[in-house]
Length: 290
Image (cartoon, rainbow, N blue to C red):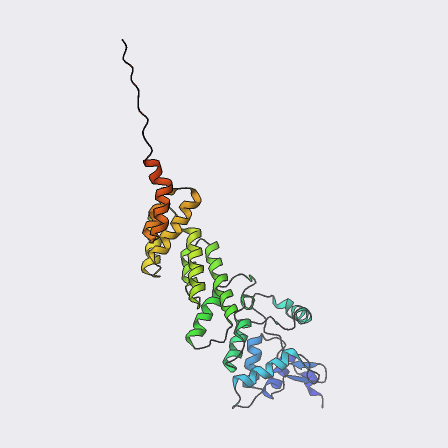
């Protein structure tokens, strides 16, 4: 009887939702249940109203993916799960541009990736831990690094060694640039390979250990040795390298001694320090006036 033309579109959208129809063609227009919903509500709508009660979250995600990706049979009717920092006005245009330029690496919200991981334990962790899923700053690895440690505690370990190294190195560099180099060492201590771990920590110490013994520097060294269990010899070797770079032979010899490099310290003392001490003193000549 085409009486739907006298019913408000919002009410028709509710009827279509209760009927389990995401898209319904009325007498006057096309009713889209998901037209004004964000992607999380779209997933919820598919789980609660479009699927049977026994359906899983994986089933709802699969149906939602078909809704925002579209196919030959079904046109797109839901918004894609883009990160929250992207303006809603730009969603469709950005998504189309992204699909044209980089179809292998879609830009999705980290919450969507977490739902995918919940549905499939072997889902890729590399794209989940990409900073672009959370922030517009692609060099901000704070959440990515901490989330990776949570995944490890939950036995999600299927991340390649190169990606793990990228996480550790990037977050350590971020902390170092903020002046928190001692916390960067804490991050570097999570590198699985012992040789690379030691090399990265020693390099960080070489860059930032100072010869000046201030209260702040002593607190940092105490924290490194007592809390992070960094060998004190590594710190003294870093100071010896800095003293050598600055031409301070006495400090270099002292820290080489404390670092346990006896032979190098002995050669330094003989060549540069002891040789200056053993020079014969010049005799003073006195003349008696006669």
